[in-house]
Image (cartoon, rainbow, N blue to C red; front, side, top):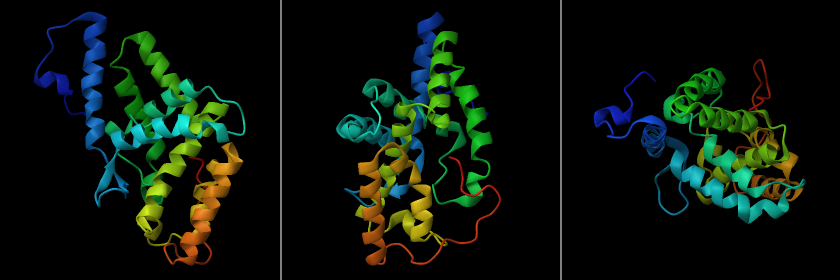
Length: 222
């Protein structure tokens, strides 16, 4: 979190507003180095956050017709592109890693303050507002963005024949609980996710049975 900015390695000969914007754009190149737990469908390697964000940005216009409430597609794309930028400093928190999830909110809030603070004040406020909107899920766009964010890694799990569904302690009920956001924003996508879970369970890609006893704060809000 405290390491120098990338632009400090080779300072830009540009000052002022544009200089801050370019420094931010250089810094977010770090997103390409943040590995996620899911593996790609095309090759057997882990997805990085930049690839994940691109995939979400494409999924929004492709699947927008299935939103239960009308959404602004352009605004929803902004939400999915911005929401994982904080992982540049906070790191990825896998959906089924309960231990790491306990510190997620604190880590990501500190990251948001540092990262978005690199921008000029007006844009810093705009980007922080997008991030906060995604996290709060109080708008139709944020609810759909969260649904897409939940759906994408589970599509990759399907293609991997299990993937992170095979995390110790995870059962079909665990997956249903943690993907509930999908059905809250889109009945059709929720039904598709349910079909994936049921079939994966039948195939032995997800453990059968009830999820393990929950700790305090279950189910997680995020």
